Image 1: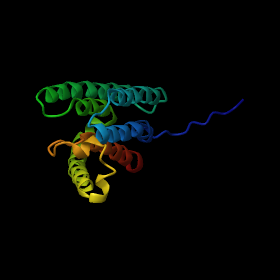
Image 2: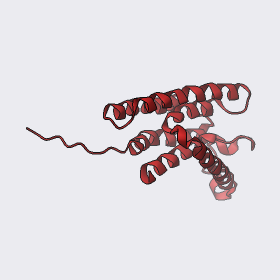
Image 3: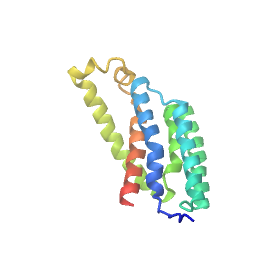
Image 4: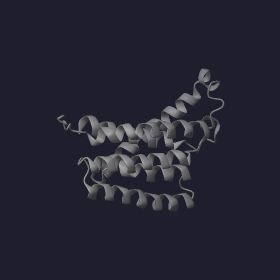
Length: 174
């Protein structure tokens, strides 16, 4: 009979691996077209639903945490719809926030907001700085975010980066 070894799975690392492609996709498509596609948002949310359930089934994620995190998505979706209807943010951004909400532990929400704030300043500065470099402008000509009016910013870059950094910190620092 074969002995099955049970190895410890880091839920944060698994969530990081599941979310990373969607973080990159949100950033790149928002830079290129100033849109975060619904397929990206749905994919990110479904990644949590599936991976979270598998982690629960393997005993690595409590059911009450799984349910709480799914409810976080619903709360953030409602808040995002309100903010979008008031013209305070784009629809893709609000849907991406809802899709990424389950990846963030509720007890980490304040720390995540600090991280998001710092990365907002950094990504805006980098975006504006890169767009101001004359040799770069020719290669960025087809990317909408560098030709959009100055008050607009592809926040998907910041959101995707913040989720990626948060999950890296959770996976590698605990």
